[in-house]
View 1 (cartoon, rainbow, N blue to C red):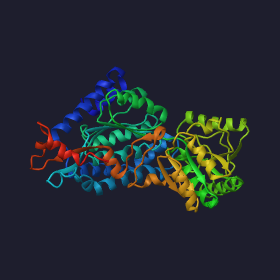
View 2 (spheres, rainbow, N blue to C red):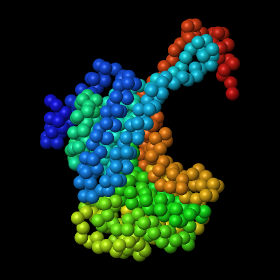
View 3 (cartoon, rainbow, N blue to C red):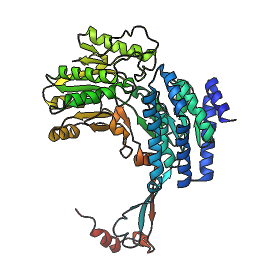
View 4 (cartoon, helix red, strand yellow):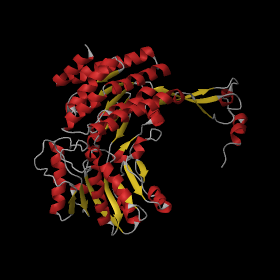
Amino acid sequence: MSLAEATNDVRADGAGTQHAMQRILAAQKAAFVKEGPPSAARRIEWLDRAIGLIVDHKTEIMEVLASDFGHRSHHQSLLADVFGSIEPLKHAKSNVRSWMRVEKRRPQFPLGLLGARAEVHYVPKGTVGVISPWNFPVNLTFAPLAGIFAAGNRAMIKPSEYTPATSELMARMFRTAFDETEVAVITGGPAVGEAFSRLAFDHLIFTGATSIAYHVMRAAAENLVPVTLELGGKSPVIVGQSADMADVARKVMTGKTLNAGQICLAPDYMFVPDGQVDHFVASAEAAIKQMYPTIKDNPDYTSVINLRHYDRLRGYIDEAKRKGAKVVEINPAQEDFTQQPYHKIPPTIVVDPTDDMKIMQDEIFGPLLPVKTYRAVSDAIDYVNSRPRPLGLYYFGSDATERDRVLSHTTSGGVTVNDVIMHVTQEDLPFGGVGPAGMGAYHGIDGFRTFSHAKAVFKQARIDVGAMLRPPYGEKIEKMLGGRVKR
């Protein structure tokens, strides 16, 4: 059975789903055992093939993403899903040989003096399952592959059913460049995703909602599959007294409108000093007007993915209005959004929301921004710490003491200072969350190590060191340990 036939079986026959995917997984595992750990040259070849797929299909990628979203900015797709996929692959290609080197460790004294050696060998795990989301479906499929390929693994990929055209394109792309024993793409809906997460992979990486991660982790536990979970949460922005509010607004609103805020690291809510809300709102309106003088038919402004999410976001706005919050819709051209061919929502600021509002409870994943105030920065820190740990945290200001206090007294997956989101673009920094925001990390060498097994190797000295450990015991062992068993 070919990969295409197996994929059709998966989608068409629920009873055969597990069998079809298990056949592909067994084929990958058999190939891994037969061929052994791939050389650096083979890993670089895989990375090159993946880069070639992105480059050769860049126009199609932009078109299918626009189709799946109703409207998605071609330039944002070029930035985030095309360029954003190539860079991790190129970074891995440039560094894989050094990452693969045996890591020398120090043997326990005095074994090193006698000639013993301790090493860590980073070896492939085998087959890695990849469950990728709809918001950046290409990037969040190919970026993990940088570490997966660099570590010498094969991959099975389950892309999102919310972006079906993009998923089908990726399945076709991989079929043209990879054998199914190297990479296989399985498309389908939630039932397929559930069956996929139950497979006995050697590692599984899931990127998506925290609510789904519970089910994925539970399913993976059936086979004790190690997991990396890249989730989300409510990433806060803390604006210090020393911050330049115009600069803050430009950067925060850029992050909030990129992909219409449908980013796991999008600024989810922000704290500004008491008395500066109006200044921020005015600065945000000026920033949006400069970036998006019109919104409704502006090719640079992306649509919300579908009607369900559009209705969810509109519900947050309606509830905030009902409960008395000040809602500021930033609509520079005063366009009518009640009738449109897409699901666009203008950037919307919700001032002083209360904690019983859904907008302050759920991850927003859209172009809505709650803004709260604080009198002392410690109040903002306490608020952040009273909630689940976020995937990202952002601080603006030039006060080094205040900045260091925010960084040292909060816990988040990562931090960007004086901007938002940008830490995820640094390939030499680990990317990952804490608790409800995720577990494990990848990108760069951290991705290589996540998808490798760190195998401990001890090479004994030529002297028979074990002789002193063999019975009969007596004075010799007491003498040997006597000087070591002490405070």
